[in-house]
Length: 185
Image (cartoon, rainbow, N blue to C red; front, side):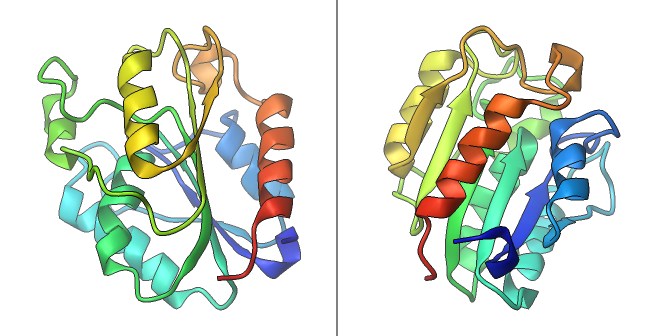
């Protein structure tokens, strides 16, 4: 699949992705990418966030490829039962451990627990060994349950601009390779 053949949905996490974040950079470079907007970025409500993701998927005109980061991963996964159109694939980066009672802010736990069912589309989960929002082993376990290809990003923090992942060329290359392997659903 090529970029022009897909609706690429950028699904940011808590507080949105700022101008230096790799998601924002990718959105500006990928001609068919658009951001799934949330009404409230700093006080996320699971039902609202999942409805926004489902609406974006269901309104797409081309096959959908989801590119989610952090709480955006949780919103996308929780929205799957609401999808009325098939998704070609999902690229999930730094999923938070939404079942961890130590997670802050605490209302992020309302996005858990994750489904343990395999996802109905190909997916990749990229996780860091020192992500403050999810233990590496938890991310690895989540990816296995979903049937996702799991990629170890090493010690990369939360894989966001604050961790030094603004341009993130390695992620871009991994996404490009993933996209070429996807088939139209």
